[in-house]
Image 1 (cartoon, rainbow, N blue to C red):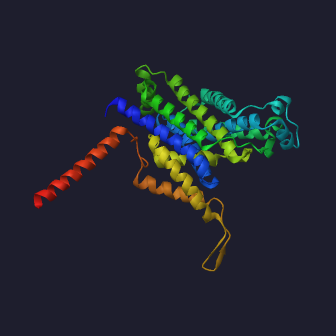
Image 2: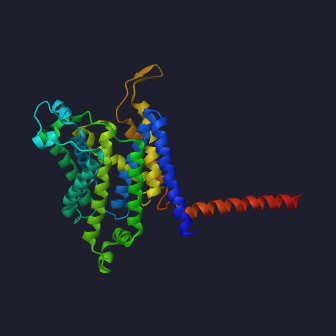
Length: 358
């Protein structure tokens, strides 16, 4: 398929997604809109995780802490001074915190840049490590960020968090954020930088031997991913309408890892599909945690059973499809064209056999 044709098809797909997002915002109920927004949020998070782990080979567990940076930044900047005074009941906010009142777009961008800066501070020492050591250090940094939020009552309102965050995010906003994230990540992966990242993933010694600057490329991958995680955190705070340190416990990172493994850590397409499956399954499995009667026995309901269900799902995936749903395969217009061509060829062949038989 010609390059111009693929470009036209891609632009048409983007326009169609934006049109459907506008239509959905005006016609779908709040529950469906929330599901679609959470799907978009998980797409951004899993794309950033796949960039760091799937394509660079650096297993990081810092997502929850970086999400918190973006979420608190957007919450503090978009809450009105009056709302902040009502939220900060124990310790009054600092003057610059109380008086800060920004529109949503610059707040999101600042949340992304602050998360990227924190990602740089985390990555500078952590990315010199390998394997389990990197995992432990990034997990520790994530927990340090969460504990800082608890112990900064004049900035973050401590353990009480921030309530009444105005919901200014529409489905179209989320669609635009998802499109930009997927586009930038895909372009980076397909560039010479992306080839260097894959080289680092396969063999760091060989990559360094051919002239790849390991630290520079690792940091670039980590900082870019952290920026998008910060954006996702800002969107997350708008969807929830409230943030507190308990929201950013390690299970949030584990959810992103689950989605990435389910879809395939080396496939953006797989991550997008798996994010949708995880979002829907999270709601469908919510009922297993609710109290119910089972064979005349009153089952009280056990919080966390959804995580057990996802663990079992991952167990079967590891046994029967270790590469995830998509492995390392990606959606492409050439693949769609080839599939349609083969389908038409089979259909024509069947028609010819029928005519020959008659």
